[in-house]
Amino acid sequence: MTAYWHGDPADVSLNAICQMAGVSKPSLYREFGGEDGLARAALDTYAERVLSDIFVILGAGQGLRPTLAALIDFAASDPRMETGCLFYKMRAGKHRLGPQTRARVEEIDAAAQTAYAAFLRSCRDAGEWPGGQSVDVMAKYLGEQIALAITQRASGEDPARIRDMLEVALSVFATP
Amino acid sequence: MTAYWHGDPADVSLNAICQMAGVSKPSLYREFGGEDGLARAALDTYAERVLSDIFVILGAGQGLRPTLAALIDFAASDPRMETGCLFYKMRAGKHRLGPQTRARVEEIDAAAQTAYAAFLRSCRDAGEWPGGQSVDVMAKYLGEQIALAITQRASGEDPARIRDMLEVALSVFATP
DNA sequence: AGGATAAAATACCGTGCGGTATAAAAATGA
DNA sequence: TCATTTTTATACCGCACGGTATTTTATCCT
Picture 1 (cartoon, each protein chain N blue to C red):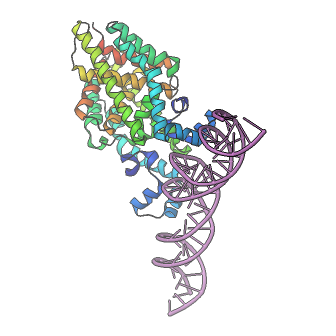
Picture 2 (cartoon, rainbow over the protein chains, first blue to last red):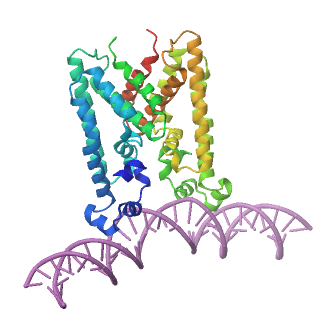
Picture 3 (tube, protein in one colour):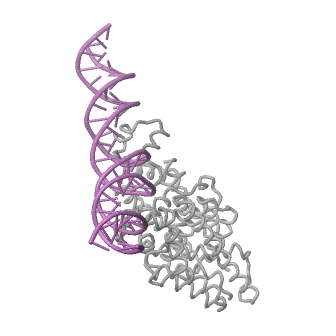
């Protein structure tokens, strides 16, 4: 998971992974069934250990401003996002993934979209957000802005600048 | 250029290009010197034929709203962007490029940043935009939103939805 | 202790890559 | 017209990949 996460999933070979992990290739093969199974397992672990934080933030019911602030903190300042997000990296190169991993990516993507939409819907119902655009469009917008910020961190952009841009992007949710 | 543009530059082999172009590999090699030279030449041609449109839009001096509208049209509706943008695709996989191509990507990136900043500066000086954030941050923000929209088109997203999101993103420039 | 068994490491296979040497074909000059 | 030169096409090289067969090592169980 760390190898795929820290580097580019498409550029990390099974040979390299075996060497890093101190494991023989047949062992890896019997455990995961091949590259697709390994990538899928890595993504599963990543979703459980890292992505869950985002779902927790969205579902905490803390209201619009604090939730957005927490999302901005996570994307722009969490040290774990210094090298980007494994999920977004895999999603960006979806066509290179095996069937299991691709299916999992799409599953997570749909779940994230649902969570963002549920969060926005609850804010609109609480009167914290006027909802100029449709909830679905704004949910996708919000998710893509987070993805953009984290992807920029992987490319070594200045975190302060990333935070500035993300705050601009999410200022459209501010109720004057 | 079309092969790199339509597909993923990292997934198009020289063999495939030779077959598509009806050209032998040694001929391609004597003409371009190798994969790096070919990619660089493709990017040069792309910049001249396609990216120039963006610089024209930015430099036309049409004012804030019409220029943003033209950028939105280009990113969300221009049929040439249906399969994404070769420049953004190369930039996303910069670490896989050869030295010449990578240098050209960085050169174009810097030029684009400069053009966006000059455009915003002229709008601020004309009083069309209050300029809450620094021009440099907003120039990068603007460029990344365009990049995001075009990248989403390459992944088959609904163009109408992309336009909606891009309009939301650029609404931060609107003067009430 | 020692033979059956399970696990691990090594060596290997086919494939496609970027890149090049060699052979065939076409163009040139007198 | 025919030898020389230049261009084109074919065949090939080394390499690294994902994946597997074979051999070596370690673990049981009595």
